[in-house]
Image (cartoon, rainbow, N blue to C red):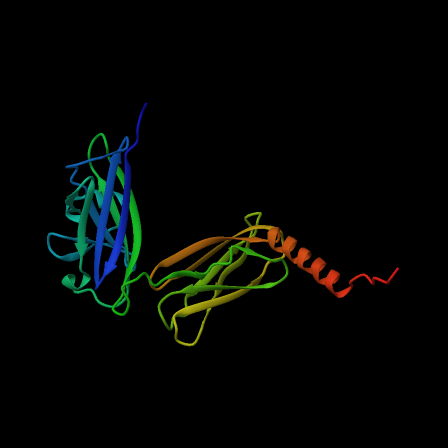
Length: 242
């Protein structure tokens, strides 16, 4: 039986430090001594950090990420776990920046690649972007609120919505900010039964998030049941003595 390596990369943000952690296993057992590498790409200007000169270097094609100067060897923790800590302040990076981290296990037999995305912030050590109001099932012909968290005071937070037939029905509509909170809102009325794809994003920082919203179906069935029960309560049968 042929096995494939399992590689799981995660990012943990604590006190302004991003810990890149990687777990590698093969056939149910941890792989030791693989010396995986990690690459950081700053999404805002598509650059990769050069760990040799402590500067940012332009990256124009995915193949450029294979160059050694874009890699940093991770430290083994044992039982197939590896880590590397990234402090943006060390490289003069401040403010809110979105990064993509690429984990690579370069073993000729057990090689694998995975990636993750995270945001560093001067104010909060947690990811601060994404769809925050996630209605999974909504009723037809009722206004649904969709919210997206991004940087404050932006005018380029957009939303796209595809109907169940993959037709683009909302194209790059601007989401409105709730005062100066960094929470952007858009209201939409779904009219067709089925699954809709919602994609939100902020052009300035390059953040994006997506979700599936199911319109009708269970929600409308529940509404009909509620209405039936309400009608029964309001029109109780009259019982007269025998």
